[in-house]
Length: 329
Image (cartoon, rainbow, N blue to C red):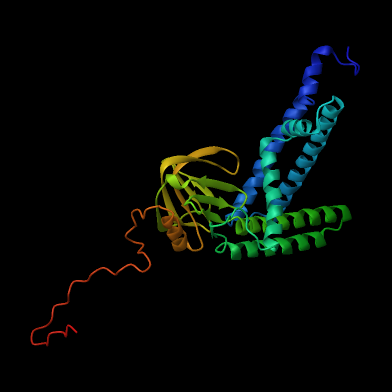
């Protein structure tokens, strides 16, 4: 018998699983809630409105699960430290065991959103080095994000005022303000984390803190301006290896690669893509910057003429009989 009154055979499961079945339920519950939170964030970025009680419920569940994860992680860290393990390895192992991967990605996203708010206030951009060109994409979605944020503020205030119970009133107010803060942080991350055309001709395609893809200059075969309107999803991956990173239901720059590159979805699943479509506020300037880096023009669609291109020749209009010939001067 162990000191706690349990049999010796049950000790490894209790030590390694922190409760066995309860630990598995916590991990599954945390993964489900994190998927729901990321789904809400992606849909809000795409302009899809959820009923405010649904958003509040998701945020309340996320905070509850994250609080439970912090408690479990702290207990594991304390046990590892009492066993003589160093601080760094003990903390990393406790986080890996106590917090599911999806929850860690959510925490990282929210931390980057908070950092983006600070960068936005300081008028600084992330990842734009010397000689690089920033390619913004958040301008077209700014009005929609402003309206969503304003609606969220109004709903938060009204919901907090009509609830008579002080504790529920305070909880709803905190959750509402947290949701508004994350909405503003989502837009701020899109502003301070633009696409980047490197000085060497490389390309970095991003959407805030949710998506980040680096493409070396040697893999870019051609680039062209091509405006396409599609559904409201943020990320769409086709079976033929094409990737659409959609902002405000559109893409405007198409990049063809010589070989596929590996990208990671917001949920963490990797995929391969060889044709990249993304949106830019000034797509012609982005295309020009990439061509200066060595990319070729590619095939331009006939229905989208290039700015400044020569107009097609028109067949001469026949001159009626008896009319004077036009003056060539």
